[in-house]
Length: 462
Image (cartoon, rainbow, N blue to C red; front, side, top):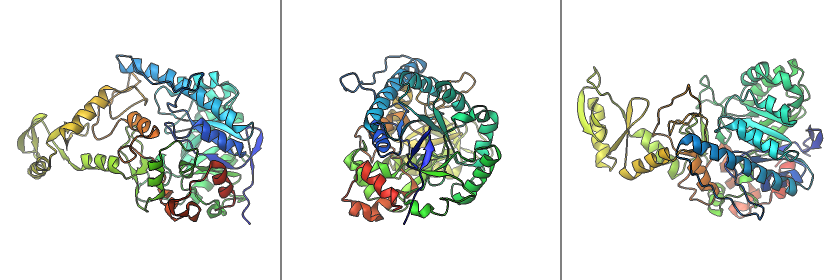
């Protein structure tokens, strides 16, 4: 019979099951609290979560600032209010059981003030912080300051070594766990490095062994590795449980909790996930963060694919390869003879508007799409520290060029998390999402469990 050993987290014995953080507003105080109520570890998203007033009424996000910097300052206050709201809900729902974590992206806009503001105003309600999407050197220092635990998300032993030597060894007493997130399988943003091929996934086992070997070397034998990305049936991971080469482990599930009664996504969104076929989830690099991310290949993603496919190199002056002059919406440019033929085809198909990219290329789209791109770029609220789509940066020494091949991630994630059309928005999901359709637990798409029922199922190993 399958048996998953419990672990100690934050001084408390809990089930070795963690809720994967999914922002914006997908991992909420309700979902986190219900995970914790089962003596597991719940996680709410600290990435621009919804805030509510004392009467439980949603506080609308209204940005009045005229500049992006001013709007980011407003966003920070919204985010802190939202984190406090979700932390209170999670605390109440947990009924004093389990543990409650807050999840943030290090490269989200003004991450440090949001994190410090939330931990300050929700003191005692948050037991730890999980953080990825970047190299969060300051995470340990902030956690120690507020006396909460921290779980860095890494995709390799190399990344953790860098973080440890630069910062974490100074605050090792607050290290709650190390999240190993498989960069080929995890949903949302992934930690693929330039040295790794997105088309050639590597086995997790050897990477886990390498991570544990380093952790043992620096005195972290008792700290659990929290395995994330590609986790469905825990019996499939029996080879790492009670394995001395891997040490204590826990498991983080991010995709499966999407289809639960407490999950805030729409019924249409859940039904799409329940019917996904293998190959319907795409690992791509359209995110304005610059990171790879894994999402359902719906109409939204296909539109982005189309923009990049309708792409040609150009120059403003004659070159050896770009010899043909052509008048377009961006003015007179030079392209290759082959590209000139392609452009004619794009225009005949209704994609007559050319937009410049930072890669010295042109993409071709419709007037309506161009208008939406430009409006979204103007409406930027600084939700990322650096945004490749809008050209925003909160750093004085970083000046990205706006790239129309990407999209406004704040807009689409806000929309889909509040009932927007899941076919027309970014729909993050792990590569294993097609298992909803084949797992008998979901009865061919007819059964949506509660979080309690899901955790009970996971604990059986199925």
